[in-house]
Structures are given as C-alpha cells and as structure tokens.
Amino acid sequence: MSEKIGFIGLGIMGKPMAKNLVNAGYSLVVLDINTSAVNELTEMGAEAASSPADVASKVSKIITMLPDGPQVDEVVLGANGVLENAGSDTALIDMSSISPTVSKKIAASLAEKGARALDAPVSGGEPGAIAGQLAIMVGGPEDLFNDVKPIFDVVGKSAVLVGDTGAGQTCKLVNQILVGIHIEAMGEAFLLATKAGVDQMRVYEAIKGGLAGSNVLNAKVPLVLDRNFKPGFKINLHQKDLRNALEAATTMGLELPVTNIVQGMIGDLVDDGKGNDDHGGIVQALEKTNGVEIK
Image (cartoon, rainbow, N blue to C red; front, side, top):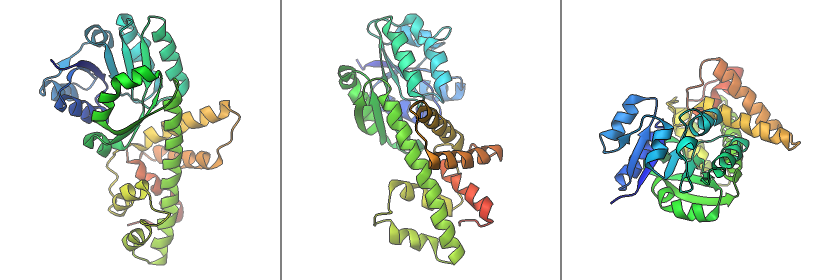
C-alpha cells in the first residue's frame, strides 16, 4: 500500500508538485480553497479534506505550500488547524517561502505536542514544479530530513539540509536576493543592447557560455524578448520574499542597498498593476524609466 501524505496548498507550485507525488505512487489527502484544483487531484485518486485539522487526523506527514507566513500560521496554528490533531508522529513539511521567524514559531508550537517540522522552501518556479526539478533548501532535524528525502526526490532535483529550523528559509531569502538583483541587472544590460541596436538574442547566445551566463539568463531572456510575462513566479511573491529578506537584515543590523533598490522597483510595478506578472517582468520598471522596451 502506498504511503499516505497530506498536501495543503494547490496553487501554481503546489498543484504540479502534488500531481507528481500522485504519479509517483503516493496517496494524497489534499486541501485548498480552490475547489477546481482539489477536483483535479481527486480525479487522479487523491482524497479531499475539509480542514487542516482533518488532514492531520488522516496522515502523519503533511506538506504545506502556501503564499506567505500568515497563511501558514493560520493553517497550522489557527482554528481547525493542523495543531489541533497533531501528535508525536506528525511531521510538517512546510515548502512555502516565509520568514524564518515564523518557521521557528510554528516548529516550537508543534514541538509542544511532540510533533516536528521542516522548513523546506523551493526554487525553480512553475517549470521546475511541473518537471519535478525544484531545488529544495531545508532546515530542521537531520533524521526527519532523511525520513522525508524520498518525497523531496519526487518533487525536486536536489534537496540540501542547510541547518536547524529556519535555515531553509534563510537560504531561500539568499536565493531570492540573488535572483531579484540578477533579473534587474539583466534588464539594465539588455536595455543597453537594445538601445545600441544590437541583436539581443545574439548577445544572449554570445554571453551565456561565459562568466555572465546563468540559469536566470537562460530562463528569463527568451521570455522577456518574447514579451511573455505569464507567471511562473509572480512579481508580488518576489516582493514578499524581498520584504522578508530586508526585515531579517534589519534585525541583524545589516544594510542591503541593492536589494532595497530592487524592492522599490518591484513595489512600483505592483502599484502599476503588474504584480501578477512573472518576476522576469521586473525589467519593465527599467523600461518605463528609460522609455525603451526590450524585445
């Protein structure tokens, strides 16, 4: 009989992750406010739950994939939350991208009932989720990490235990700082190529094999040149991640000047109604300032 696990959060990332687990032979108990997403999974054989507490009553391992810390807090610690039916065999695998402080709070609350948790945010966007090729950054107990590693191997291409509780979320903040700044730098560079009248795709082909080449360039340059901002990872979610990064930096007495600049650009785009665009669309802030479009 296949292992039964819970999955709460069937959004852009969560739904394909859940489908990959079903296809790998796992039996899922699923929950989401989007009934159509739940129906897609039940048609594949998953069981629908009525609440997070209901999920926790039926399985010992529970994955959460939610937009931000408040949603994870509510699902785990709120009324009819996971905590109500958590026991010593309960393991929460939170794959959302949230503040490390919230991850530590949730893990501590679960520990009072003998339950344990991993914070395990991911990188790779919707394409990585669909392909089962996510990079997973994990914080928490090593023995629990080893126990759930087969799950990570289904949804990801790599899973690294970074450290104790909260370390996975800190690693994700590092990732999001680098990605956000890289996209902004890509925008500056390709604005220059555009204004100079040089073929941007040939520029990309020329530099992608050198030191400036990266996964960010490979993923985003073709989309930007095609003006394709269909979200694989939304601008407003990147805004949330950089907010968490800047808040963490403030508590440590750090100044992150370029991260602040990119966060300001993202804020302007959200104000312009572009928060649901793919985060490759960060370049649109530079285009607006310069009156030049990369295409």
